[in-house]
Length: 184
Image 1 (cartoon, helix red, strand yellow):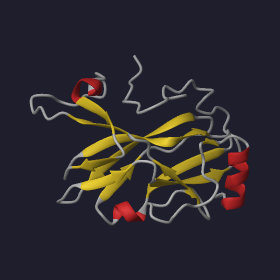
Image 2: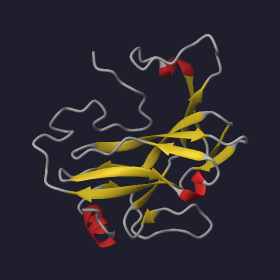
Image 3: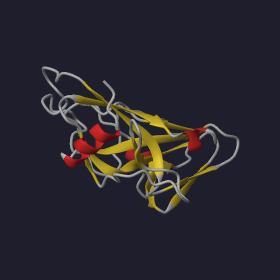
């Protein structure tokens, strides 16, 4: 069942989200904090973007993204048309063994042409969420650090026989922006 604001606040009090905002902050910013049925997470001020080199190919199995990307720290980032940037959540998540989280983009950015992509936050997983932001608009889109970037929805069920931590997931405990990993 999806969790409401009261249940989400209880999960936060139990340590699920480090750095969480218990109220929804809306004035003068893109909203963040606890909502009626979710949590609007913020993005940190760390950004990774591609260097333009047409002779190179992205190969997630080779793990060459660190060779192709540049990192910067800034209070906002301007994403060019038809490009994407990686960022991370400001909050650090510790997902309980009986909770699965689905992350969706915020309407303010969606209406500008920004697609927010992240995978589900698995039961037992913990870390900063690495987020892909794709600009589908014909103009650059400015994205702001320390403001809302995506809404996290919390679904509670019976614990699985093995959760992400039990399986030794490769993204367990990630801090900062984490590039793709392929186990060898």
